[in-house]
Length: 215
Image (cartoon, rainbow, N blue to C red):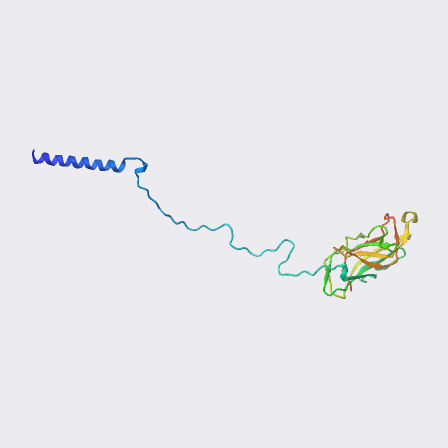
């Protein structure tokens, strides 16, 4: 065999070997592929939930403030008297009176009232309500008003004399006084005052305004 033939055989063998290696690298199923694991660190994402929030107040409250307490009947005394002279209608006429329910703070701290007192005439020596309770004059201002210990507030009171009505309809009787509920209170004050009342409830004798300052 010539040297040229030997070189050709060696070349053919090398080609066959290379082809076999190539088939070994590309052939086979998925299981023959090497498993590659890659660890990837992602940047942290911003959270949609804040880690802290500003302080908030419950509805109807004010943080870092202290509201003056509402006046209760236990810390008030009452009387009927003339209104502040600056208010129109002060005084009395033949058939009606324009006066005021005056309350004094007998407690040890300031307290606040806002709105209209519940007012009715009572009698029979046992606090029985005589006739209809007072109507509210809702045209009057009704801000919250604070009264210091020893100071006063007033609620304008209009009273129509029971004598202007037919006695058979009114059925008049002399009251022992007025029962007054401060705004928001479930207990009352008693103010002695012998006014004539209609006991049937048909005729409304009393109209009361909201509490305002008293001079």
